[in-house]
Length: 200
Image (cartoon, rainbow, N blue to C red; front, top):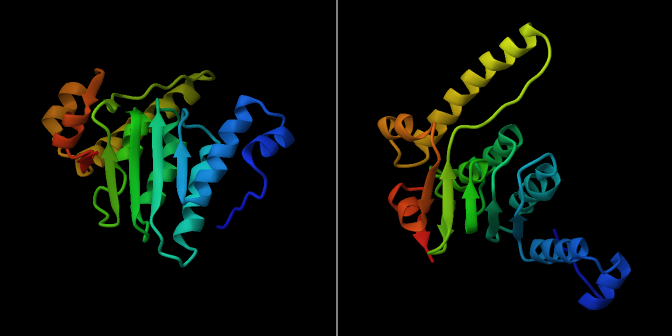
């Protein structure tokens, strides 16, 4: 992927209307040009276009040039977030997941991605934080629909548990003890638990 900007930032923003969202868009595209993918919001359906597809394209472009995911997320949709995790797990290109300030909930699962892939490393800063906790689900509808979603959620939660155990130094005893609570982690704890490889 090769994105070039011929206009200075002030002219480019003028074309886009000059508002703050356009500054964010500009930063996103400038970073894409440098093979950096920014994930700095709650995980939702836009993750496909903003992170998953660009990551697939960079991994398959034949350049082999390193990629960075800049991560700062309060969490969000686990089903969509694990789509990004699935791509990171199999990536062939050197990838750094860089936790800027927060990797909470689904954000922490993304930070753990590639734990067993030698092409992936995760770094954070001394004041970066992580959060591990159980997810939340709301449902309405018939009793059958509620029951079916509850049963599926139980199976999916077990799958997430196995993911955490295999992608960190968290053992089953610790997981069961803390998962129903809010386990806030500072940078040193994320390093000790094998969630990050390095504090920079």
